[in-house]
Image 1: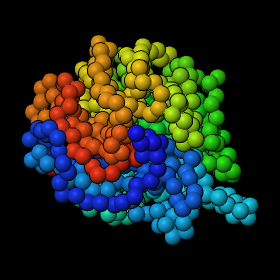
Image 2 (image 1 turned 135 degrees about the horizontal axis):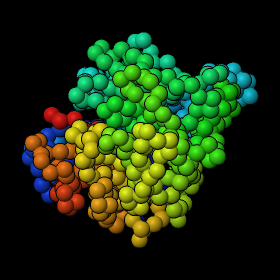
Image 3 (image 1 turned 30 degrees about the vertical axis):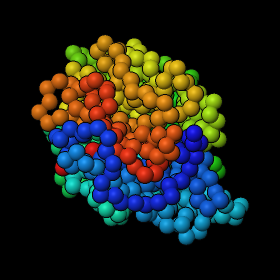
Length: 470
Ligand SMILES: [Fe+2]
């Protein structure tokens, strides 16, 4: 049995490109497209170790499925942080929870201008015709989806002003618009919602002043509204300006603030309301929609921000670690009311949630959420199963195999589908018994395995990917 920590949080030894992976089972012939996954390619530089799951140097993985066969390639995302790490043999740029070692003199020099990573490793999006690797800084690196070569840092003109952004832009396919939320840290900080259109010129839609901004990883959107759940993991912007500790360690948990929901009309930019809610934390909004005169917001929620702590590598190294469970909550915001309430749809552990976004984003009547999860009978260690939740009934299905650690499930719908779960789930799974990873193809309806394509090396635990139809 291999060391799961070393396989999932170590380093990738090789960049490879293979025309044909061995496939067991049969991939449905209608699956024709490319899955690009993003995440860390190494947690070590020279003798140095990054500190947190959200650190590391970005690596892209490509799986192209055609006629039942799968080709594969992986490549570090070439960027300044990568080049400097390779040239210097040490960590040179600041990450989520790791700062480079600096002398006192260098530290004083770097105050006000920390070298923040451009290693965009968190997610993937295709915006207009550009394939982008996204980071929580507004630095986005364009890449070639075939060769995985970086094209360069993609700049919007004019730039969307702010230092942090979500890596989960929201798409309104009908309006051919893309929206994102950027936080500008300043004496008076602002949450700023932007709209991208046409030649990717960002237009400011709304700007909300805030004295102590929250750590925000995603936001909700309906046909008419943005929904910002403001979790009480907040920062004094002065502390970021001084930058005396790594980025996330400047944030403090302040549960006395509650977790208000802000609702903004996304056509006019007007603030519609603020809804009180008890404190909670989340990385991921799942889906949101309008139903009568209320907003329904599904969120993969935690009682507090302890999940951020649990992702430090010195904790993940412990095979007895119990990662805090998130659960799927449905918040309801009455448009004429003042308070958000929620019910738990499922108390199964859930993270990296996904659904049939193309078909059901902002739609009442969406039915299924897919996520990584931890099996209640195998509670210790990292995410070890895939989960499917029926949001109407709360019924769950799981895919769990010994020594297997699946990554984010991505739903690929069958063309012309009618049933809500007519499609497949793609997930990169680390098989700790073999010491390698495979691309899993599950029937999204039955949650039974259809096929797997074996990769000759382990893939580190990553975050998000995206599938593009051929
Ligand atoms: Fe995310």
